[in-house]
Amino acid sequence: VLDASAPAAVSTIGPGCGGVQIPHLVSSAPHPGQAAFTVEVHTAAVNAPALFLFALGSASLPIAGGCTSYVGSPDQLAFCITNPFGFASTKAAIPLGLQGFAFSAQAALFDASAPLGFALTQGLRITIGR
Image 1 (cartoon, one colour):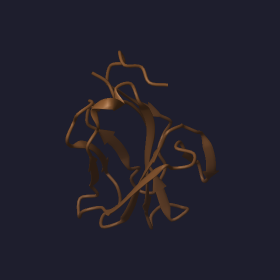
Image 2 (cartoon, one colour):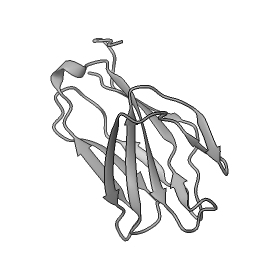
Image 3 (cartoon, one colour):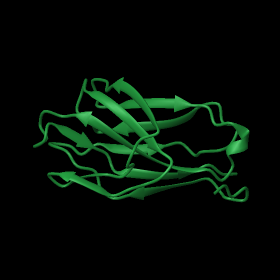
Image 4 (tube, helix red, strand yellow):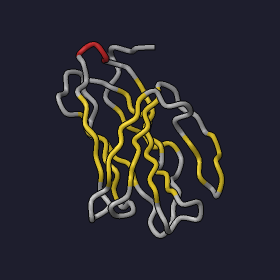
């Protein structure tokens, strides 16, 4: 359901999981017509493959080892590699017609220090707004 009067909002869904460091997902404020909406991973394993997951719905699916998927079945994926500081990002334009549209985001990364060999960020619920 689109709510054309909705303000831009980003809220956290649950905790992340990982090894030595737990990666953290952040985003810029999501506004319609924005040319470069950004989602970033901070404090992740260095030089690690990372997968950004985006879904129209949200979920809370326990995986194992205290890890939970908050995106359910992803509708969009973006792949990258973290830099030597454990940082990665992806960008997208937001069309004007998406005012009030909400979606979920999370990132998964390979992490040799994690018990399961991977880490997950916390989830984000993102509402595109004015």
